[in-house]
Length: 439
Image 1: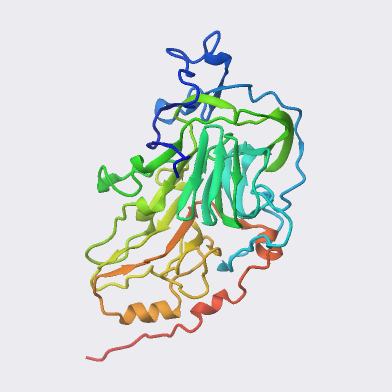
Image 2: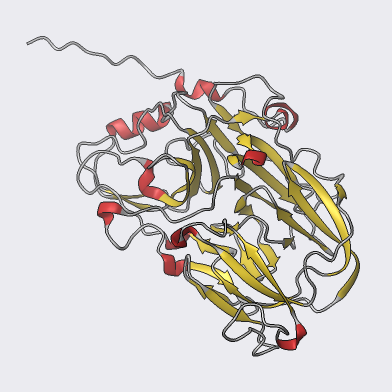
């Protein structure tokens, strides 16, 4: 859409001005005695001041009023099921599958993005900045005269139904199904929708999302930096009585009021920014000889842990691609993993389980919980003629994979009433095909 303009690149240092106010960025310094247009200079830090240069992220914002101009925060009463209490349910090691999560009823009350947040599972503690949470959002109305920011970590948002019109302090972006966006810690944003919308959110408390290393793949492949887009500067020039600023802080929500929009940034420069990415631009790497590669080859973004090669969370997709392996059972193999695997489906049918796993639903296979193709998939792939074929055409499945053991919330296991109690049955008809061949 022509009203949305973007800057290209991942991890770049950008500079942007609202085109209505040229020369609004200071020249040669960050904080002059008087900023152009008498704006206020405000730095937003996404890392410690003394972090290594390769990890140091921050942005300078030039705005009409500083963010500090608000009334005291008070507890926010909405979003009853958006919370991180990992001890409210007993542990459950079973394979879990959710039918599509509900959209707000068409004739029901108006529910905006924040009010429609529901926590499914997670681990860790935002106070110690270690862990993650997985949420579902389900909304049917826009965030009028309000904004949200997360003091606890980054949001990776995966729309499944409905286009999100997102206004940030940095500018505006449109995020549709089969696209994703990342809103880093502390950045204020509002979500507008024009129809019932649903999707998934991966929240990480540790560090920030980065591109995975490519190793022997070389300089090109997977998600290429040039395809990530950051909005250009745009500001909302209006005073608003009782504008609400909603904050997630230590796992709880608070709200403060002020008499102006938070989206009053006229210009900015830095490398700590929100961004979006079109999943159809992912360059797939795959086997062209034999065997099924590990799903790590489909990693779009990762949030590394302190252990080399081990992620707090990976965002992995399973896009349309060619399958050409010889002498190979081509679908994902049966598997027990030291990682936790939460899968969602944006559109189409997932190749390893075409029945039961529907768009808008999810699965969770916890640490060392066995999983793999259902009976129909196993029989079909075991007897298929191995010719080159397109797989996952018209489909987009994804996975949030983590080195942490995830606890399911009461809403996720009981209240939502979407857990499929019969999920285990998809493996029960598998036969013992063991044969002893006599010479």
